[in-house]
Image (cartoon, rainbow over all chains, first blue to last red):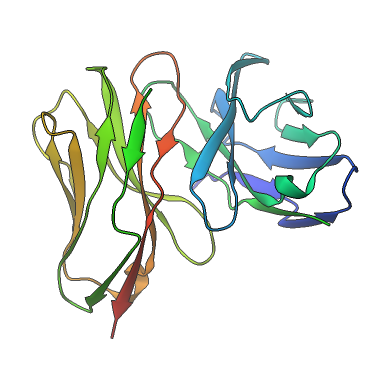
Length: 114
Length: 115
């Protein structure tokens, strides 16, 4: 069964450093998403991406964040200058359509900023 | 703005028993979808069940079923014949049926199935 994969599973970085979180969505999916879950809290939407551009973003997704689909398979989230409060689990998801279609989630990347 | 509320932070159930997790939501839209996601200790988010708001019939998936009360904006999850593997965090989620695909999650209910 096709699945969303994410690398690395755990990333430790120092405050102020740049990190890139990588995702490989399901191959025939067209819509891609990033969500964040701070430990012990609910999952929060960050951004959605379609046709090589951002289709929607939350207020969390400020100028320090960017997303990119550098080739036909990868989807990346870059955090330019990490802060302590960026420590969280980051989930990538993909879907084949909008509306109520199922979003398939990856296993997540745990980001720890020290 | 749409919101999703789960009022039970933690619940416990004996193996083989039935448990119901509550969820309420607020929206002014008529076209939307509701989901229950399961997050086991591995942290992977797994879809449990999906409900289209325009369907009156409650969705079921094997041991999992929902009680969807559109007028009351309530969407509870019933797990029958609970198994140890059902131990997980359960999140209720909402998405508007239009062009957006932004999932809005509740705060979750931690379910512990006791042997």
